[in-house]
Amino acid sequence: MIRRLFATTVMAMVALVAQSAERLGALDTAMADFWRASGDRKGQIDRIVATGATFDEIQTRLAAGRAYEKDVPRGELAWQTIISGGMRLPTTVIVPGDYDPTAKYPVRVNLHGGIARASIEGDARTPRRRLDVPPGCIAVYPSGFREATWWGMVQLDNLESILTRLKRAYNVDENRVHLMGVSDGGTGAFYFGMRQPTPWSTLFPLNGSLRVLSNPDLGVDGELYLTNLVNVPAYIINGVRDPLYPVAQTEPYVALLKRAGAPVVFKPQMQAGHDTSWWPSERGAIDEFERTHPRDPLPDRISWQTDRTDRDNRFRWLVIDKLDDRRSASALEDYNTVAFMNPPIKEEVFRHRRASGRIDLERTGNAVRARTRGVGAFTLLVAPAEFDLEQPIQVIVNDREVFKGRSRRTRARSCVGPRATRTGRCSSGPNCESTCAEVEQAERERGRGWVSRVIAASESEPWQALGVGPQRRGKER
Image (cartoon, rainbow, N blue to C red; front, side, top):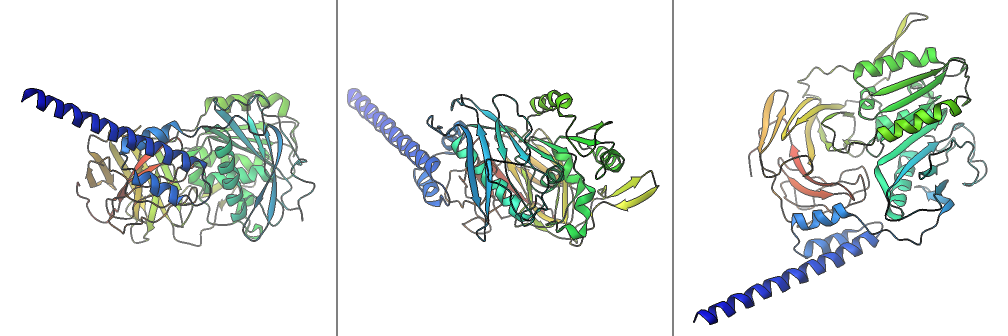
């Protein structure tokens, strides 16, 4: 009898091991198909879900990332992005000749000046201006012109597409992707920092101007908020003799940024005009700034303001889901008035024509404190790397606890794959408990319910999402 029971137990254990191996094999196959796919990958995601994989099993594979091909183009490459409407924008990409797919590579994206020209001169192999990049760095030179300025929707989509393509083909260090621009390109670096800062480790606005972005004749897309620049370190250079954007014009904006808490370094160039004659002496310091300022994908402090919830409503692990101008409980300083010394005048930084919402939040352990203004609901993308998912998570909004409970490690059931840096809708209804495995860097899915938990992941950052609506108290599930 004992022998028979033992044999039965052994057979059951063998069967379980076999089933587990079969399931994990199916998961590995589904994951491989997912990494190879492009565009809408809902079918691949559904196959991952159908394997019955656990949160930890999916998370482990997502954290490991894709296997990069060794036989990929190197050297100077001519890419082209086709934007909606058929507009073609060339881009030069320079990949080190000794590229090794097992190593992670930093990226520097360079935005050129002269954006108001009527057409793109030359092709992707002849960018107007190139500044040297450190050895072992992938260099990207996008192009623009009057119909595709650095401060419009076209270029927001263009750079998003370029980074997505680059990360799929090459082993990019996602925490060392830097944005540099000269003249109009420098102004564009400010713009991206206020609209889509999540991918960037550092910003280098060189000979640029925040003041230009307030010009109503410039056709700047969207509302801009100076406080959004507190989230990414910036290294700013202007020349004293610059006839367009001199130090005297830039300095008051830098002072305002520092008051707001922005991590900025300002390097006035005493002998320079609107040029880069200072590059040989500053290059080493710029390279060092990049090296010492990797992106923190999970910062303990965040401030984000937006007038939209269909895009540009997310920074890192915060997503603003709903705006509500009736909810303005916190007095958050705007930092929207700049003071000039000569002549002594004050002026508005950016004129706002639409209602917006802002959240300032701070995380300490599993506790998140948020101050909100004009926000009806928001989502926290809870990463296991920063939160202890075995312990309760506490969310306090405007000094009132709105949620305290555990965010469970839920098995995947369904998901939707949104575009990068934008949010999607939960496919199972407003109170669903579902997942997203759309894993390109900076692509996130979120739940829409009061406490919807979403297992979400990027190529390097697995998440769960905790939906929070400050209008009522959440309950533990």
